[in-house]
Amino acid sequence: MTRQHTNHWVLILVCTLAFNFADFAAIADDDPVKKLILPGHSFLVEGRPAFILTPKGDPPVNGSRPWVMYAPTLAGYPDEHEKWMHTQFLDAGIAVAGIDVGEGYGSPKARQLFTAFYNEMTKNRGFAAKPCMLGRSRGGLWVTSWACENTDKVAGIAGIYPVFDFRTYPGLTNAAPAYDLTPEQLTERQAEFNPIEQVSRLAKSKIPALFIHGDEDTVVPLKENSAEFVVRYKQDNAESAVKLIVAKGQGHNYWEGFFRCQELVDFTIARAKIGVNP
Image (cartoon, rainbow, N blue to C red; front, side, top):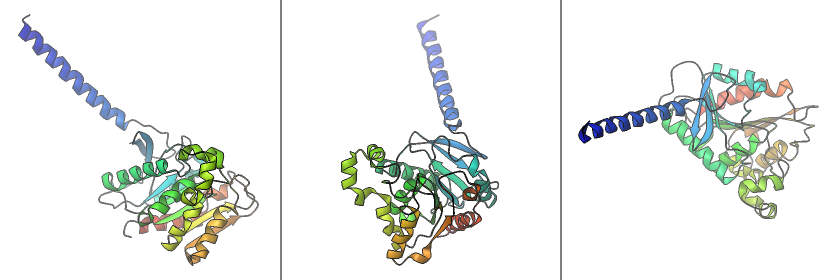
């Protein structure tokens, strides 16, 4: 075989390998990266697992699909306890989507990932400009911190025993590493970073909010979190924009009433639909 023939076959081999690698990369990008409780798909944004639970019907075009931005999207969330709730959203034509930012606790790095995810959803995938935020437990820190920074991109906020004050959960010692600070430094900068201290931004923008929270919750105390959120709205004359449903005798648990709260479902659907044409 001549050198010319050898070079020819080497070139073919290189091109074939390059094509196969590109083809594999495309397949890998579409491979599931997260187990979902309902029909949808998962993908990566900034190297982080993200997902969409997809309603039936035509695909979204030019901001036509209302959606819920959900948190926390850790490995096990959303879980089976929430399946009925998310089914109601999908049946109403509302998508549910989220990104796993790890234990971000509302930190600037976590918010940056939320922004990257929001841009992916709205600019590249045809979803509405204003989702309704839905935070369960520590997901309240996630969605509220981002919403406070992006009041023009939020149609409403819903929560199931949500955290708003990181002093109560996970506590300053556990939250500090997410902020690249010591507990002492985070204490000194609470006014800047603690989501509960930023709620006035939402109130002044009259962002509608609705929460359900147990009055015996010792993990995420009602008084310092959902009830305090309402207090902050009242201070800014936005009381009419917020509602708190107190679940009597309930703590931080899997009580069915948290995940089958029709009023919360109806609120979330209505706000998500408004987000299509804000």
